Amino acid sequence: MSKFITALAAAALATGSLAGLTAPAHATEVSAVSVRANPTIDSPIKDLLADPDTAAILEKHLPGISDHPALPQFEDMTLAEVAPYSEGEVTDAIIAAIDADIKALEE
Picture (tube, rainbow, N blue to C red):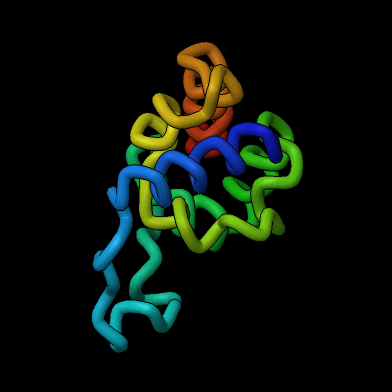
C-alpha cells in the first residue's frame, strides 16, 4: 500500500497534477452533512473512510490506507481515479471486491 501511495505522490509532484488544486476553506471541514449517507464505490476516499463500515472494508482490502501520511493528496479521489497511479496496488479486482462488500452492507 505504501508503494502505491508513494508512487501517487511522486507522480503528482512530478507532473504538478495536484499543484494549485486547493479546496475552499469551508470545503476542508469534514462534517456529517458533507459525507454521503450511503457511500458507494464512486464516493471520494475520504467519504468512504468517514463511514466506519466502509472504512473497515477499505482497510480489509487496502491495509493502512486510513492512516497513510499521503492521504491528504488522494482523499478527494475515487478508487478508480487513484488506480492508474497505484503501480498495481489498486486493481480492478480490488475495486470490485470493495464494491461487493459495500453493496453487501445494504442487504
